[in-house]
Amino acid sequence: MQACSFPHPAIRVFLAIILAILIVPPVARTAPITPTTSTPPAPVVPDTASPTSEIHAQLKSRRETVLSSELDARIREIPIRDGERFAKRQVLVRLDCALQQARLAKMNAVLAGAEKVAKIQNRLLELNSTGTLEAALARIDVDKARADIRVQSIMLSKCTVSAPFAGRVVETKARGHQFVRTGQALVEILDDSSLDIDFIAPSRWLAWLKAGQEFSILINETKRSYPGKVVRLGAKVDPVSQLVKVMGTISGRFPELMPGMSGRIIITPPEDGGR
Figure 1 (tube, rainbow, N blue to C red):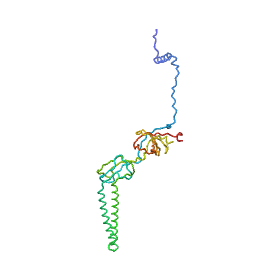
Figure 2 (figure 1 turned 90 degrees about the horizontal axis):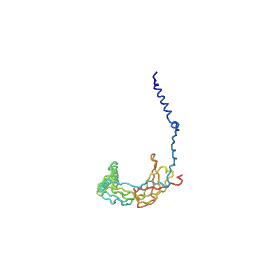
Figure 3 (figure 1 turned 90 degrees about the vertical axis):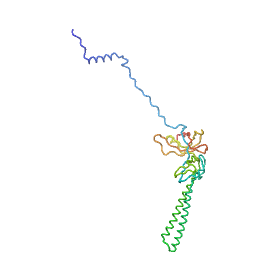
Figure 4 (figure 1 turned 60 degrees about the vertical axis):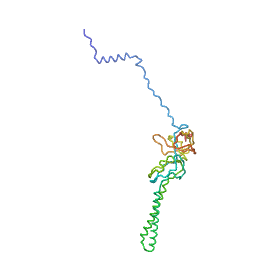
């Protein structure tokens, strides 16, 4: 009897695949493929301002400056203190200018001598006893002496530091009897007669936000609301944040308000959205 031989290896693999297909249940072979569905995108909502929008804001003085010394001198007196009020052209600092005054006295004496020499030279010129050059030089000496006096008089006017506007003292930066150099800060002042408001608004508000637009500001420190209005808009929109600077002012005078206070701008756009 002839021995039974096994099929070729390739034939065995083929038979195994056929057997596996026959064993798989019919349901598994015929199960339909369910298509994947995606959630439809949400509708785009127009970007409009809310009926009432709140923006952070800060009060600032319209004018604020630091007065400095225009001389190298010793401070004789600072008659005002931090927080005090002052009038326009009121003296805020007095410097000791004894040296400058002595120089002015000397210059006046030089001028008197130059004028006498010039007078004599003119008389001699009339008598043909001197030349025109000598007489001209004498007159030039007089002009130089007068110019020196004008310069020194201007320097002496710097011995008193006066207020350029009415307001309040923020901080005195020097003390009496202290020696100060030219350009050294003496006193910081501000004008609180009218308070400005700076805030940042979305650029889309430019469709309706104009100069003259009224709003109210709720001040954090006083817990009270105050009227205000837009004075002007910034010159450009920030391309990254899409924000624009807005400058406004408080409508009226309220003694309790101070520069540096902060609050929230409450502003209502027109019903038609500025159209």
